Length: 272
Image 1 (cartoon, rainbow, N blue to C red):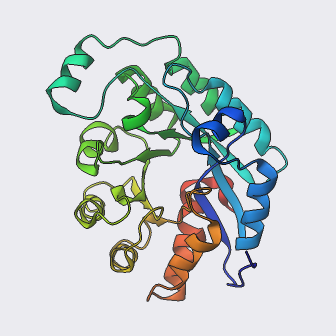
Image 2: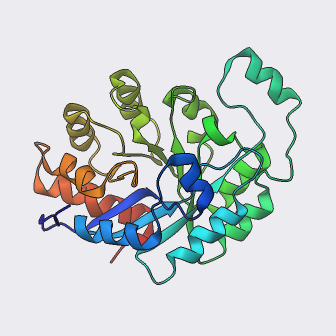
Image 3: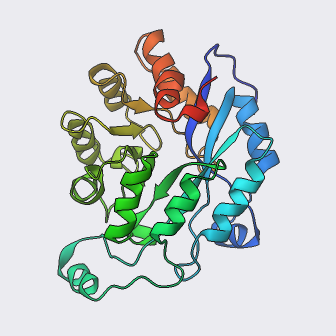
């Protein structure tokens, strides 16, 4: 794709780095560090937060997280550690029954892992995808609050913003809800996510998978300091993700906020 000419400093708070054969076999694509760096350069993205794509439920993320951190060295990437857990966060009586006897297994994230990630200069935050990876137990969530780094939380059909609010939003650490909770045109869920910003000072929304101009414009106008640019690379090419923001009917200052100021304020490693 052609290089974009937009004149903004752009940082991306949400991208993935596929780093091995399993990721290719599972998702049918391979986005290695060199390709991702080229695509970011084409789009004018100067820095991007990267995390592993989902793994097998019994494998855990220790090796994947370390690989992403290693591949980020000397590149414009900030590694985020992906976490998993034993609890079923999808709601309902079956999930509640499972959680009564849920115990942390060897492949699940432990409080000591959080401490190690947090005080290792290689990692700048965390990623939770409870519908896919399970929800960590209370000890891990408490440790996330203690280290106080930003946590990107995926909202999906089985883990909508209303459930995220109950389980992770008000736990003492900053939360970035990935994609407003819409995939990609569920207006009700995305409107609910925007409404949550009124009640939680440390809640942020990223722009990944939000295809509604109306909702993006509303979020930027009502909460100009709480919307962050996230491309979702490689599912979306960064050129496409950036154009979705450039075509909004908002001021240049609002675009500069979502592209640069807001994510850089929350994630210091993205700052100039």
